[in-house]
Image 1 (spheres, rainbow, N blue to C red):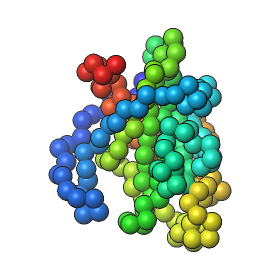
Image 2 (image 1 turned 90 degrees about the vertical axis):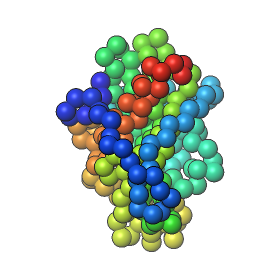
Image 3 (image 1 turned 180 degrees about the vertical axis):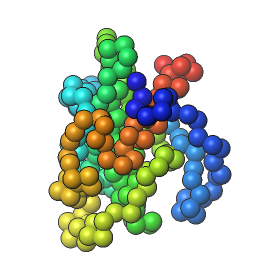
Image 4 (image 1 turned 45 degrees about the vertical axis):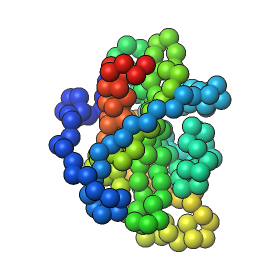
Length: 193
């Protein structure tokens, strides 16, 4: 069950290719990672509660490498039931992009079947959904300058909420969820299991 309001997510129009920072959107790029037992345990806890919640930088699963975690502020964890009794889980990390002075979404997706979790998950890089890249509030960079990257959005949630039902997802996160799950499912159907 994807969360797109008008049915399954449709393939986006072909995108122009360009260089990072030139304002041209890139095609989304999935990359797969095999999960360690520790990572599976971390993700299991989030998959048990349907809905979404904003989590601190320190609570972001370690499937995000340390070199990347230094750029992360927080993440929105999204769990939704599948039609077959499982759960889709997307960790949509919020990454500070210093070069463009914006905040990008970087989703990681995994599917929990009724028999258990997939042994691997997928990052979706260079997404092209609406609101994937947003200018942060004006005091965001002051916070980063004073305290470093981390937890600004936890104390200043963009929608005024830190958790909620799936229909209350903040802008861009529903589209990130739909895109990540759609790519995940299409890759699995193509035999990458």
